[in-house]
Length: 137
Image 1 (tube, one colour):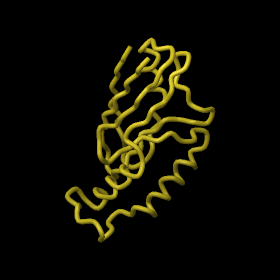
Image 2 (cartoon, helix red, strand yellow):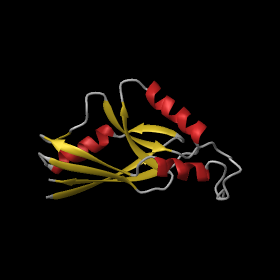
Image 3 (cartoon, rainbow, N blue to C red):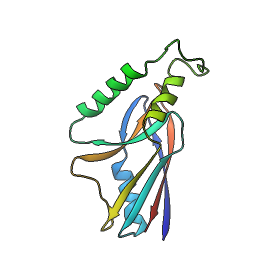
Image 4 (spheres, one colour):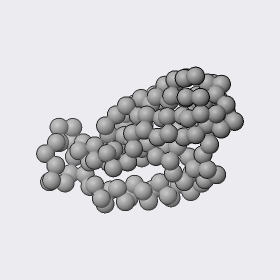
């Protein structure tokens, strides 16, 4: 059985946005007991991560690390059509993930105790991001 759900995630700009509950609702609505949920973001300047959800400092530290690794406005970049954060957002997306598979067990996402699922917005301005969740059971 295959079930598909869609999410529209509105961001306020760069940062992580917890989508665990939204994806969990799609899994529950699918009726699947066991299988795999594949989560996919349809953008080249946003990504998905499974990360610590108990302490927000973890996600702030990840953002600080990527800011050091992939700074905005670096003279290296020639693709700057949409501003200083344009190419860095693409690099950040390539270095992370646009698709994540999470097991479904007993009708629920089988995340670890301290894990949450996040959309990571890499642009500095607000966007609405499209996410597809496909459950195979």
